[in-house]
Length: 239
Image 1: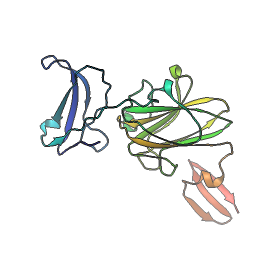
Image 2: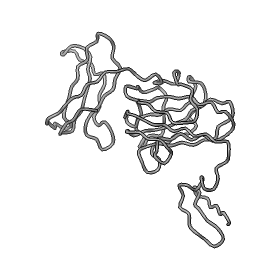
Image 3: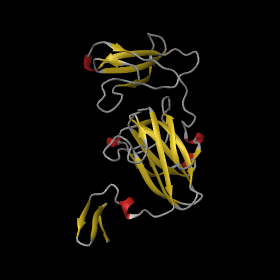
Image 4: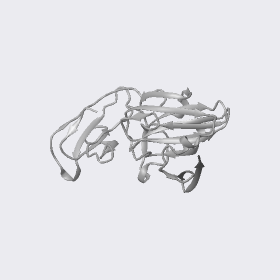
């Protein structure tokens, strides 16, 4: 996001005077396979924040520090999630904070943060798919984690969660939904990553056709029909 360094950095933010500092935030690696550092943290009017740039294991070099200031997105928390319908949602998670409850399935058990929320009310019984993958009609310029919850914001219950889909760093979830029920979707960043996203929500009341079900499966031509591996099961479709 405008900064750079030719060495492995560690960044810290402190409050207080130089002789009595207390650490407020810290980051080593800003993302997978990234040795640079990045922090997003809430600030208050009139408070001084001291930023330290260090080198991992004593590393040194040249750096450019980019400092930006902004407000958290309006859907930063579950309670302020907008009600959305099927379609493509464009936005940014820059300056979003980590919610007390968020997606639980990050690769390696790592933390997520910079999450944004949406509320979907099912118009009928059917199937909901949410995706930031290219195959799913979405996109994102950062590593996403996607989850869906039922219940009120004070008592959320995770229904489904996905970190990496289609061999990418993007996410996709699909779940059956019931008419009139509310579902809270959270789009989070792996290791607190943030950026621009295009979240595609698709809803259908029809059961998926064989072509849809097998769209990501390897199909082989056989005598009398097609066979496909469906998540440890075998389905045949005669011609």
